[in-house]
Length: 371
Image 1: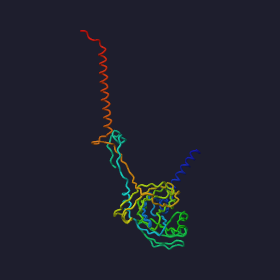
Image 2: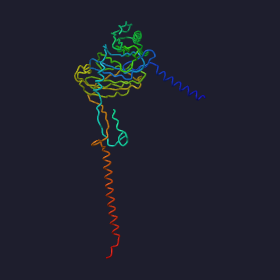
Image 3: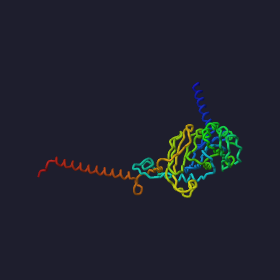
Image 4: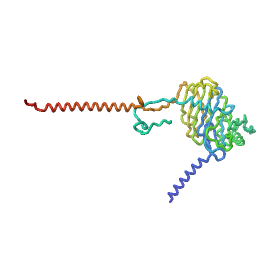
């Protein structure tokens, strides 16, 4: 009985832990802290951002893919200078995905595998805002506007505690650790973009891909704010499209996995949505993916620099096919058949030679016939 009670207690503790993780707020946002209202849950499954930097001005167009049952949430993004905020063009993400699509090649193989005849009996599957609020001491309100599903406030702050108080007084409920985490930004004189996500359709939860936001500010270095993501509780995934004069790379992994370049090359945006970011003309595009399995290890913002050389790179995805000739006859079958036929022919010839020799030997042993 004591053993059974210990087992039941252990199972109950495990169940309570899992339930606790489901009902607790989820801070999940690569650029800052995102928190849902009340006891609801929200998680950012993927953050994808386009960064355009010309050496003087930086523009970030970001889009979140979220899940959960929250109907309202808030997050904050520090920026190194005075920012302007507007809705972004969602089509830019599709255009960049097309530009960075992997090259597809066919690679033939000689021997059959599972799915090839004779290892399968079936056919091959071919399916492929409200008005600006009053500023508290230590906080300056640069502007506040309603943009689609977003209530956006642009702020300055000289005191982390005053910033947190203003946010809470104006409906931006954010983590208790916020005052501590924004201290480095306050010390550097950064400003802040605070965003409340509240769908215009009342009662609709925040789910799927949200409208993108475009944030522009002056900066003599390419920086992507990430330090506040250390408050996230779930694994983070970040995708960056960087449009600059040269191929760019992160200075360090800032506590995540090694950043992985998925595309690098000069592109011509034409007259599509990417041209609106670049002003037209060729530009170097670098696509970077990075995972943050332990967000608490994030220790800095992403700073990106030009690589020594503008080496192009495109991923190659191979589709393997069985080597065939004519009307799809496998080469291996012809080769094996030819080898078998050759072996049978050689065997038959050897058999005939041996029979001839045996007959000759038998004939030589017979006595000569008398007349």
